[in-house]
Image (cartoon, rainbow, N blue to C red):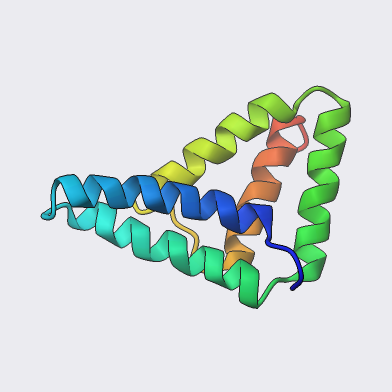
Amino acid sequence: MDEDIPEAIELERVAEWRLRKVDAKPSDEQSAKAVRQLQKLADDLRHQPNAKLLEEYRCVCNWLSESDGISDFVLRAQDYREMIAFGEWAETGDDYLRALIGMAQETFGLG
């Protein structure tokens, strides 16, 4: 892809945050597991993006932006990323996008 995928960048930001936790406490295996999974999800989105899911996700986000619901969703999505490997999980980039779409729909009252 010519441009980076913002969703992958967000995953990597959380991975970097978790990596700092591992650097501070090398025995933190849960954070290390989270770093690996977050990076895997970012790589999935970059190298095997599901164009249909990305389009659906972005359409739902545009819809939320127009209805002033995007702020609540952004906070929920950030919490979700931070909880991956700590009670939340997405196996693939597609699973991650589906989870975000579901959260976005719930934010708007459709889920």
